[in-house]
Amino acid sequence: MLDAALRLFGNLSLRRQLLVLTMLVSLPAFALILIAGFEQKRASLKESIVTGGQLVNEVAAEQSNLSSDAEQLLSVLALLPEVQGRDAPACSALFAGILKKSAEYGNVVVTDRGGDVWASGLPSAAPFSIASARSFQQAVKNRRFASGGYNIGKVSGHPTIGFGYPLMDRAGRLSGVVSVNFNFQRVVQRITRAGLPKGSSLTLVDYQGTVIYRNPDPGRYVGKPDRAGLFNRMKNGAEGASFTEGGEADGQLVAYRRLRLPGEPVPYLYVRVGIPLRETMRKVEKELLVNLAAMCSFLSAVVLAVVYVGKKCVIERLNRLQEASAEIAGGNLEARACLEGGELGKLGSAFDHMAEQLAEREAEREDLIAQLQSAAAEIKTLSGLLPICAYCKQIRDDQGYWNQMETYLSRHSDVMFSHGVCPTCADRVRKEIEELNALE
Image (cartoon, rainbow, N blue to C red; front, side, top):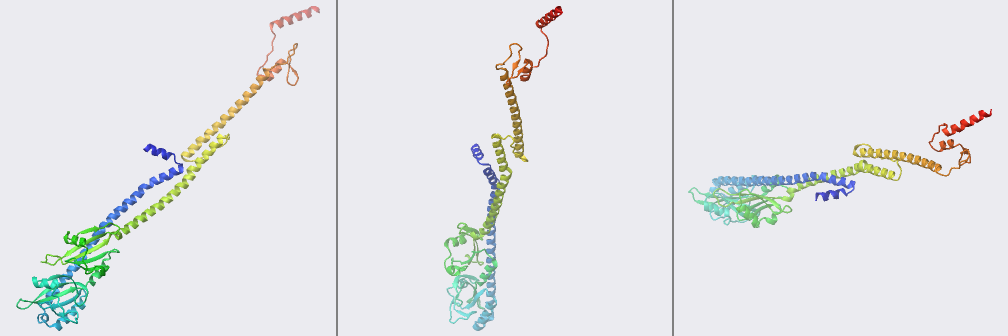
């Protein structure tokens, strides 16, 4: 498989090979960015879980403090002479002053044993009763500070939760209940200070699963049963647990706490914070996209640089080498690649040296051919019919002149002549000389 991949890679053009190698070198950087993004995403989720837990703990602590303050307030009010003496005008004025100074309270009332209110911090046009309120019933039953559940304030008309404290006379008999309920504008302020991510929610649910307060969109949820699945998980799950619900696209991180009064088996309030996972991950995804965009920009610049440098330093030099090869193949032995620097420069130098050797050998070959042609011409001349005088042995050349044999052969060959006398000629010459001497 590797060999097939290498063969396929080898069949690509040099430019494409450079681009493929650039992409392969960039892959580890992309992998590191993605891995870092996923790790950051996981860390952000953990941080959101911690943040959600801290927020819900802070809200729960504030609500717990409010209930403790309410218990102290009611226990003090139950001992006041105005309350013990059923001085309705004085009590109503006192309660109104408390409401003015403590915005967290919705109303303060005091009732008789039957639950009929005889003093209220908020003015009421008609008498009313809280006998059906759980806080009143539990305070009467258990003779201690008791919590209630969701109800609509009889005077304010706002959703609230109440607390009751038994009012005992000097003989130790129950004479009524002092009660207070909360104004959840304090919760709104708490959300504002919390700085939750966009789309987060804070929900308060009573012991029966009825939504007492919800931010945002209170009109859609308040007074209605909480989602059964969520309420059951808060009711039966571990104290202060966090969990995720749904996928990352539309799910949320949920953290909750249960609040209960000492001696009460059932929590009177559930505090829940929901943080959408999408918002939690948005920042991480944005950073990941920014990093990927930066990497893509860098990779684009690298690709352009590789293309430009590859063209100037590799492809154009190879094209020059190819052109020089074509010129030499066409017969121009003076063509040279003239490349310098690097491995391609060495290759160009070797090519130019080869071209010079080819030129030298071609010159030698042409000189040898010329010599051979000349020798062949001379051999052809001497191998033909030579017109020679039958008496004096002179040879006639192509121009019609008669030349001595020695002169002609020396001119048309490498033969050199030296002169001497053979014995026969020597005897003949000697006889001729003797005859001439005899005649004298």
